[in-house]
Image (tube, rainbow, N blue to C red; front, side, top):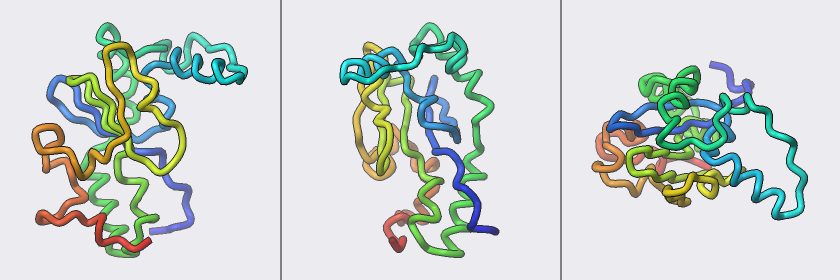
Length: 171
């Protein structure tokens, strides 16, 4: 395995109708309310480029009326948990460094069932601020703090035999 490659896009975990799926893509695709994002920029004196109708599949605000279409379009970015888990443990064994495995840990949990977006990341765009009406968005450590009723233990591949493997990593 070569470590001189560019890290992949970020990882997202999604729950919709009780089913969980993983995605690897650019964070901006998960800004659920692009109109709110544009307003935040213009309200702060920045000029926003005119949106193209095809931006993000022509869906400026992801909501109940278009979520099925949105997730269908996002399917091209889907990943299998087994792929993420395999790469995580391969890198963990080789390096033991947080920086080598961080790109495999989800930065957001988008829960369409609860209409809640939980985000946890070191820097960059705060997607939790740009959620549709009726949603909540928070910066919270869902990877560790969420109970199995919200995030089943079987999805937390960074835990092994009840041990959080992230806590054993070197900086």
